[in-house]
Amino acid sequence: MYIINLTYHRPMEEVEALIEPHLQWLDRYFAAGVFITAGRKDPRTGGLIIAKDIDRQRLDAIVAEDPFVAVANYEVTKVNITLAAEEFKALVGI
Image 1: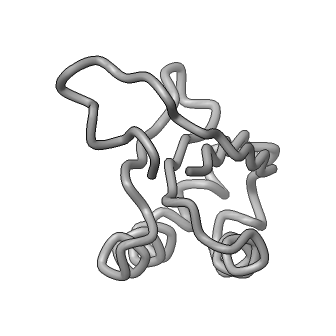
Image 2: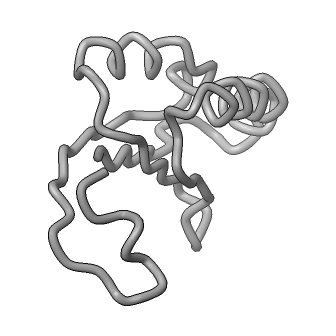
C-alpha cells in the first residue's frame, strides 16, 4: 500500500478554494477502489491518503490529477504492512 502525505505550501484561502474539486477527486478514487482512507492533519497543515498497492506509475498519474497539486507538496511512501491490530488485520498484504 502507499501512504500519501500532503503538506500545504500555499495560504489556507487557496486551499479552501480547491476543497470541493479535491473532494470530488477523492470520491472518484474511493469509488474506483484505489483509496482506503483519507483525512486532514491536525493541526491543519495538509492531509494523508492511504492507497492500495497499485502500479506506481498509475498512482503518480492519479496524484497528478488532484486539484491540490497547486497548493500542496506530496510525499508518497510504499509500505508493506506485515503486522496489524486485530481490527485492522484486513490491511495486512494490501
